[in-house]
Length: 122
Figure (cartoon, rainbow, N blue to C red):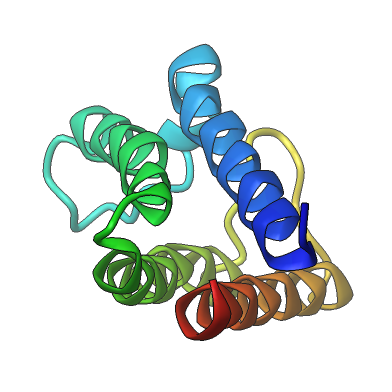
């Protein structure tokens, strides 16, 4: 198995795990949905469903479209994290330091880069 395929499978598993967490720990996600988004529970459960479905399309003939959608999705998701950072809101019961928020931003950039690699070479 080549490195791109292995990376793609790990990437998909990461997002499946993240998507399932929306259903396993809904109260955690309730606390980070920006207050201006109506129906916060429904919104983050929808995000969980999308985190489960979109990455699976990376295994199909629609891989390039799915990768572009994933990049947009990751950017949109980060806006919620940015909202938490700017407003000093907790993730669940914990507050992140600026260093932790910076690591989170770097993780988002890495995920976008991995998605681009899958798009370009997968």
